[in-house]
Amino acid sequence: MQGAAARGMSQQCRPGRDFLRHIVNPHIAEALLAIESGKVLDLRNEESKRYASKLISLLNDFKKSLGRAEAKNDFSIFGGNPALLAPLLAGSSWGELVNLLYTETKDNPTAWNFLKGVLTSILQDLITYYKDSCPEVAAAAEKRLADLQSLKAAEKRGESTGTEKPAQSA
Image (tube, rainbow, N blue to C red; front, top):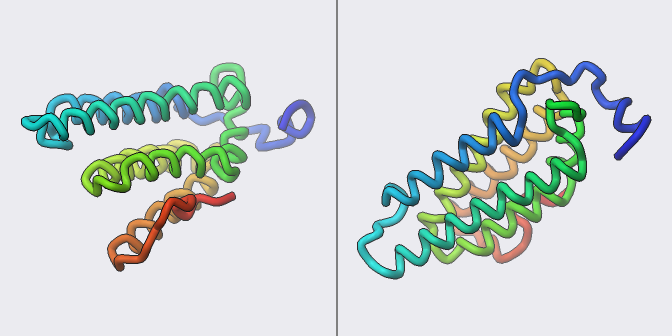
């Protein structure tokens, strides 16, 4: 969405925090520290160390993917249109990122639950900081948060989640 259509979205969307710099990056940094310090996986054995490296790589790739999305869609608060974050969240791009994280960690419930927690925190902060000035972004984030929560409920019931997009389709 570009030009006049993009400008038509929430002209007043002026959140005080940038999604990537003030929400995603701090959560990713905190998660990386937790992994590296052994708070997520027991780093005393080689298998856990390899999995920790995988988690670090996945989180860095997730952050890079969001950075590329920001460059393409211009949803930064610094000269862009933060309202353009709503279509990213509502569309398949977000679901594909979550699906990648799920697919790569589904064999390790501790790792997947940790990543779900990081995603949940990101979405909760996005809702908090955008709800007043960018309600369409907050609404899209609320939908994705509900998707994650419904995925958690399905896993607790023992339902198969397979490799499909875990409640993140467009």
